[in-house]
Length: 492
Image (cartoon, rainbow, N blue to C red):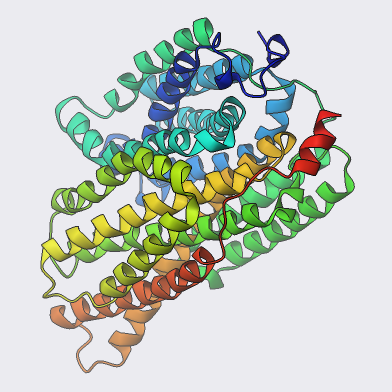
């Protein structure tokens, strides 16, 4: 079944004969467990070190390698969407993910475990843009907010419960069950999709430009690897292996971008940036990702350092905000459909700004409840900004640009994640070192605590300045509609 079977309707959700609920269930089940898998393993890294007798830099490849592979495969998702039907692509990608999960569950050595993990990353990386693209084609712009809010629930709620769930599984069942428990749900998603999923896009089979794929794979892969390695190297960004890798990656990305403008059928059409609300959404998306990383990375360090909380307690402090973010995403999507982006984004950016400033005043005397409330406010503001901004930006694109628009945004997520991790950690460490060098007793435990507080304060102050930019951007947003001229050209 293809879109050609439904000539009267521009979107399949408008056709009473098409059951969109089973399609959504198929995609959301697969997405939930693929995204859950991103954070499910984080708390088990120490266990894996002991199991396989490996070092911390080695075991970190379970996270770094996952992000690296995602960054390399996402750019080609726009091409794959145009080469295969939705049904073929989703089932194929979920099968790859399931194979990787099975290999990891049975792995006798760390090398085999890592191979399985990287195969999982291929499936996860390709799945995200496919799902965004399907929902854009299923639903008209005026109904997308609520639907994309449901997608936001999956993409925010799954990573939120990952560490908590994995802690319970590792403690009572063992690390292999982190993979074993996922397999039945992945298989169910494949079987369910085999029965209910239909094609919602047009298979055009554009020409494959091998050079573009090479530039994008090397470029995005090298950038993610370089920034991720900066945190592991004692020299940081001054290490030749770090800055040379980043330079090579940057040059490759520039060559990739230049080539896309020359091709009649680009792998990733960067002409999406000619649409102002899409470009606006990308900038807002990057700011929010950075703000989230400043908290998801720095707050646990702060709580386990100066506040002397356990890892479990630190995770529980962040859990209410993360869960509330996922729960509120569908509501924010409904509000977006009803009132547009400005009503949500303007007040939310002010809340974000105030929260970042509050976090920049953290001290060793700060009560834990203040951090809980601050993180809840942060995640509420994120739910009111990120998915509405993405939906609004994608709404302005013509249908032919949907695969490229989703590919650009999902590519930027692991890239921004790697950059955010390394930059914020580097800033915090540099501020700590400067503080200790200026103190009379740098070995004193209390002085070390104060140095870490100073580092956290600086990171959050930078996040505060970024949130000020978000406030300014919020005042320039307007409800986006597909360009009528572009749509008319497409129909011809």
